[in-house]
Length: 297
Image (cartoon, helix red, strand yellow):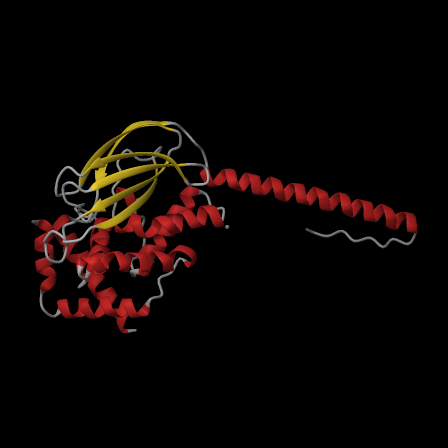
């Protein structure tokens, strides 16, 4: 289809062009017996009743085990987390970190800090977080990848992470598009966190015709990085923003997450075609080189 072909084209261009500048580095048997006497039938009924109770207890045990596997483990967190909010978000944007319980619901405990510069850098000290699972949120104005100008409107991006495994947490379009899908897979499908996270992030990349070729966790990827996965994140960011005025970007992000959360796919063909038409136009007017220039600057 037109939109798929054009998306592949623009992704290939951005991946190759960014890579050229930075180098390439991311699954009873039932036992039946014929019973002739009434006492045997009674014994059989009793046996079936006992078996049914046993099966129920086994299911309950499996359910309990599955619930505990979702959160895998819990630990108290005392550490300083740093990272980049990309956009990038400009100086003064707010970064909030919310503690999550074993059901991945907010506990009411949170910390807040401000972006330190226009590259989106932040640092925040967490004390006595009683779970390593946290939800990061950044809200503020950002630097438009397409024009290089500061946005007139604020946007909000999220990132779900395991703080036991991360001292650095980047908040970006990939972490944002995947966080609701991760929580859906853990809470509704009883998939362990690590597996749910990998599945969700792979599904997001697939929606943009990007093959997950051993990519790192989304919160480790940096659009300023010097590898293929960084180029892929940059390509996603450019495609999502495309021709939109910034007040409409939040709507596009909301539309995407609502599609992907339950089904793991993005089937909005109208929006895909819209993005593809924009990409096709720019490819004929050498505008991608300008976009690269804005990002470098």
